[in-house]
Image (cartoon, rainbow, N blue to C red; front, side):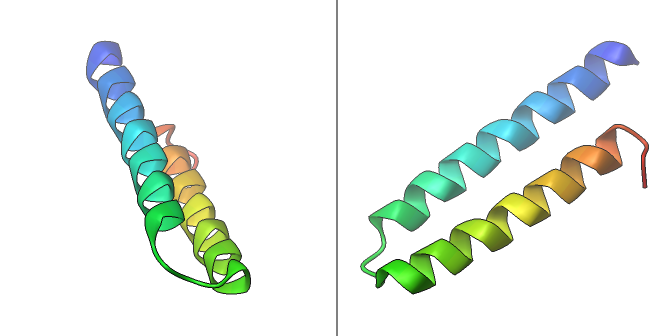
Length: 55
């Protein structure tokens, strides 16, 4: 059970890092890139909290 939860958290964290990297590679202006990164981080935090049974 704990190993499964740890694996899910690790995979979620890696996906967040990958998506943030891909957003950096997009040809967006700085403001749009900053907003996209903020949204991705918020979604990532919410999903990590879901795995920790906070929500």
